[in-house]
Image (cartoon, rainbow, N blue to C red):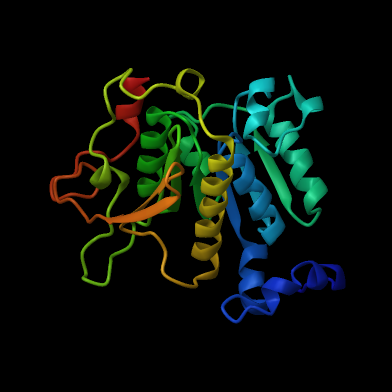
Length: 270
C-alpha cells in the first residue's frame, strides 16, 4: 500500500519519527477505528485520528448537533445545528484528510448491533456519555477480542484507560477488563448528566486527544500504553495521576467462573 507524494508530504512529521516512520504510517493507513460517539470526546479524537492518517474511521452516533454541543464538540460547526452528528463529523474528516474513508452509522449502539459494528474495526474508541453504553462496548470488545480505548468526562475531571482483555500481561495473567476496574455501574442518579452538572469544554479536547493518542499507539505499537492503568485528569489543579489495576478473578467476563458469554445481559437491562 504505497503512499502518494501528497501523502508523504502530509505525514512527513510522522514518517521522520523514529518510533513511527514509514512502517508505522502504513499500519495507520491500513487500520480501522470505530469511534462510539461524535460528542465531546469523540469529536477531537476523530479529528486527530483523521489527521494521523488512520485509513478508515467508523462513526456511531444517533444524535443531532445542538447549539449547546458547540462549546466542546469541535468537529461540528454552527451551520451543522440540526444535522445528524455522523454527517457533520464525516464532512469535517473528509475536509481535513480526503485519504481517510469514513463509514457512518446514525444509530445507537445496542446489544443487537454492537458485535457487528465492533467486528469492523481493529481498535474501538469509546467516547460515550453513559454507563450502559460503556459496559456494553467494553463487554462486546472482550467477546470480539478487540482493543478498546475508553474515556469518560466529569465536570472538571476525566479518565482514560486501554483494555486488551484478549491478551495476557507480562506476568502471564489475563489483562484486566473494564469490569475489573469498575465491577458495577453507580446507581442511577448518582452521577449527574452533563446537561445538569456541566463540563469544561477544553477538558474534552484534552481527554479526546489523549484517547486518539492511545489508539494510534495501539495501532503502531510504540511506547507503554494504559493497559492496566487508569489515567486520571484534574483540570482544577492541572494534575495527572495514574492508578494501576489488575485482572480480577471474580470478574464475570474473563474470571475463573465467567458467566457472560454474550450480550443478553444488556438486552435485559435495556
